[in-house]
Amino acid sequence: MVENSTGARALALREKILSGAARAGRNAADIRLVGVTKTRTIEEMLEVASLIDAIGENRVQEALTKKEQWPSDVKIEWRMIGHLQSNKVRRAVTVFDALDSLDSVGLVRAVERAASEAGHVVPVLIEVNTSGETTRTGAAPGDFPGLIDCVMESPHLNLQGLMTIGPLTDDEAQVRNAFARLREMASDARLRTGLPLPVLSMGMSLDFEWAILEGSTMVRIGTAMFGPR
Ligand SMILES: *Cc1c(COP(=O)(O)O)cnc(C)c1O
Picture 1 (cartoon, helix red, strand yellow):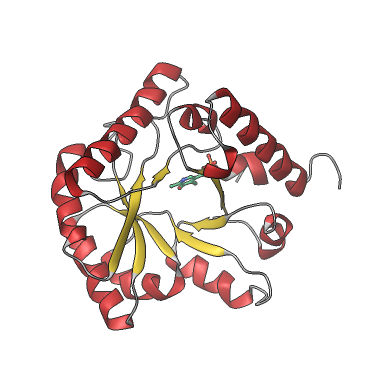
Picture 2 (cartoon, protein in one colour):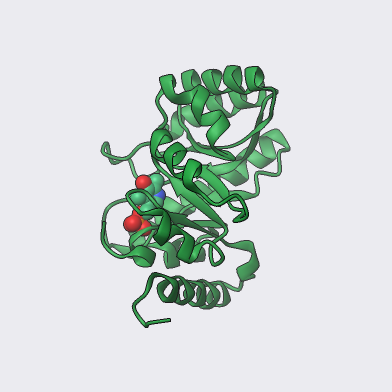
């Protein structure tokens, strides 16, 4: 394997997750690695399929096209991490194993309806905008309690936890603050609802080590594994 190959970068990421977990006094087995594969080819994706825990795609149609070409003997989980449009919900429910970006009551209701029609229970995350940046997707923190109530009233949704995108800055304190906020929201929600909510999806190429220090259980990595898009 050549040193700067995608596979080598994925292995190096695994090492960084290990050392980050050790630094945080955590078990690396509790941190899943989602390979973010928007714009990547099937060949690039297959190079890392055995080194990642799941694939993260941003668009329903792109994921569908790739899944049609994906070899059936390579088992992997497909997660929707991009903003989900209501008119794509029905398809998303059949294409993906989990939907990580539920951020409005309207979307929650649409996904519940589609999951009910498809006859299965969909694992979901609620995405919260913890940074307050208007360019970031996700529900406003103030809308989170209402959103969680709505998900709990939805028998075909299985709420696993929360997701966020960190603020676009290299200021460590500011980024870690946003991640800490998501962790605290999850912990408040556990007390209030009794749900286990084990998943905190936070941390991308530039901030995943800070996210691990703040309790991330799922990092979503694109460029640090595949190179620039
Ligand atoms: C693109 C994307 C990522 C990965 O970003 P990188 O900086 O390439 O690691 C993670 N999460 C979401 C929601 C994304 O859209």
